[in-house]
Image 1 (spheres, one colour):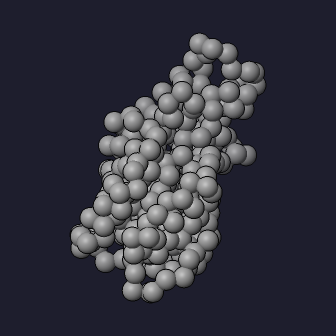
Image 2 (cartoon, one colour):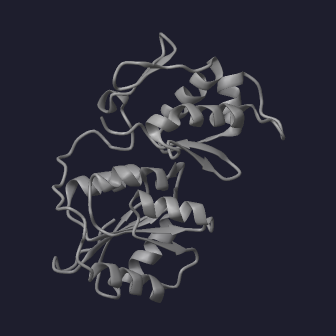
Length: 247
């Protein structure tokens, strides 16, 4: 939902899957001279960025099933405006990863309205130091990392993964099935229970390390090509595939 304001006012996208919280935050910042666009799904956020100019994004880290930390590089390919992550996660490693992936700031929930407005104003008055950005034309949603665009290919019929140069990545059955399951839903958390059923055809039990071991070996094999951030751990839940890199 968007409230009508003078076009000269800075426009902030308030992106959170909790509609009540989104509305409360939007109402507050509008009282301090900003336009607010409320979005309650990651797809809606992508659509807004494709269709209009905005000046800042307040982004929930846990956006439904999407961990937006791993989607930051894709958002950065669409916009250079300040991205402020709104999160209840106090893990230092996640904040470091987020800042390296393109976030500009982190606000721990619950954040006061006054601090939120002050941080937004601080970022809005700073000139961008990023390269000039040309808005992308409306296209297929960027929430899905398509192997055809990256050069990487997961070929189910052959049960093989190919690098951009055409060489196969040598994987065990469990490693291939784990990567395939994660790559089907980039940016979304796959729980250990889901992965255990998909890969090992049984239910997960406390102390079961089969999925963790498969991910460990995958990371070791992918590290030279994709680095360590390809598969991201979601604490006490499971794993997220961050997507294949651009070709």
